[in-house]
Length: 247
Ligand code: MN
Image 1 (cartoon, rainbow, N blue to C red):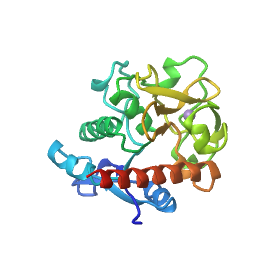
Image 2: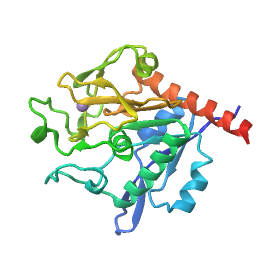
Image 3: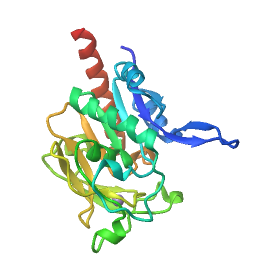
């Protein structure tokens, strides 16, 4: 059986001369490879007729971390700390997310990916946790602490995520200053930090759609993290076989 092709969303950057560049940290691709999938970076410049041709070939999509989602897609308070807004990335990812949510194509959302899932499906975000959530923990650790476990996440016992991780109390890293606020109608919150901040969601009534607010791609030495990526790649492989058989 061939390995499933897993699309991974990317950010737009620039090279030293200012030319536009597609950027993706290796950690995402390495985690997919480790779990038995083949990573395919998705350029965040695709118009509708092009992303559909790529989309149909992908077995699953990983929505990666990155800058903040533009306020034009949800009602949220503008804040001076909103940064890294990437309109081409937003439009590419929102189209992909809505299609995958609707078609039952496996989805894994990470950090921005969880926020994007909520916004694409009708939810909203806190645009800067420290100013909008009372008594919140520090969630925005500096990027040199990607592998440091800084807070716990309690996972609902009867959720799909509990089965995936095999545990209901996880210790995670935290590199985000925004968080999910009003939850999209089709989403279910299945994991929270001790301060109540949403850290894991699932799309109800979907074969595999899980999103986490932390960065598991830096924690691939942990057993629960390995189970997360393996279950996502396995669900993607199963989904692509079923789609092939139905053609
Ligand atoms: Mn956090």
